[in-house]
Image (cartoon, rainbow, N blue to C red; front, side, top):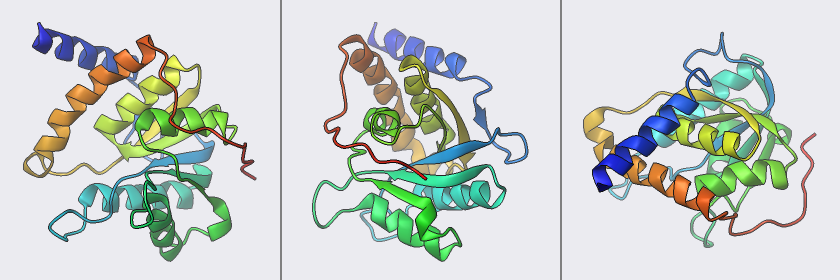
Length: 197
């Protein structure tokens, strides 16, 4: 029964977001803001996290192609020693995106928080999500369910062997999305509005 539930929810997410995630900067529609979903820069073994690296690369491609004008980085800043948004910002600036085009959301503890706060705090009801495809599908699905208009740009994925644990965890995350929506779960924090301009 549990496996059937996982499979069903996964299918619904994929079907609902079909044609809303893009692999090409040529075909993806323009949006004012790209919502970059956070992750850690380094793995526990000290090596660079390829999910992080490829998301930086994807964001730079979108910006330089003129498909987004601003970047909203949403990630975890749960303690003083861990700050996903600021780390991303440093690398985006090094890659040529001006600092004044980058906004930070320090309360993107979960994908739901990041998506909902993009509208509730930063005033964006239409935006481009940037992450790997499996993550983008879930984020776009949340946006749709919350009445937003979102598309997504798929950063390069990692090898199946490298990311097998992440892929398995994604099945559980998609199931949790339905539970969150059913019970009307909101972001952990909201706060004062911030205008992106």
